[in-house]
Length: 293
Image 1 (spheres, rainbow, N blue to C red):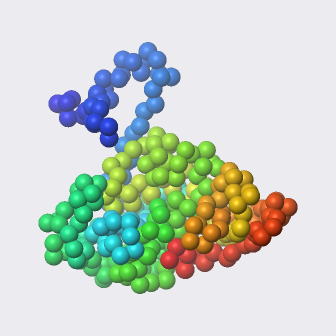
Image 2: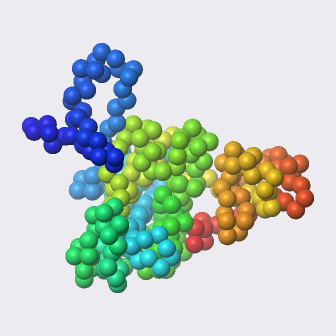
């Protein structure tokens, strides 16, 4: 084996030694090292079975889009979807189907996007998304999951208008409150001891599939009926809200956070004496069929 091929380069350009070069150091001082393992899901291995399917299993379709940019008018250049099943405890049972398709966006792909994704104009020329295949993988009304559904849903529905139920693994779980440094997908998986090659749609889909498997109760949190507590005109208490995991929406000028229905009233009771002058707090129903549009 050519161990030089196992070396890797950091974003800053530093070349790191292959993992086996650290074995001696790990043996002497294991407390000085943390090992990351490559995510064990590969597109070419699908279908993958981890357990015996049951009628009570929960079916998800995990979705990710790569686009020409972050604006609302930027088009999809890659769509990937993975259909999978989890048991009632949140453990992955099967990864059943996948699709990954490129699409010509109608204009050249910006160089910055090419650099990040590796997707070039030549790769997408003449390509389009097959809506029949999309419809097939979404049969029987599964829950559609994305890591940043506010971004993915509007772009997906530009080419495939629909009213499926959506959930978001980035905004639907209070990761910082659970002790994670960030809600970024790569950071979450690294915190659990895994790494993957990001910035392609299929890799990101499989990362979300595995994240829900390895983080206890994460799937149950996504499935739990919830409401959004909204606080308007809250400049005086913005630091308190931020420390409690609220997020600010500039165009609406409000702070908000999702809560299990059973906990929302207690949160309103906590906020009531803090809301003075023109600020107010209230709950907003979350409808998964219309959320994230």
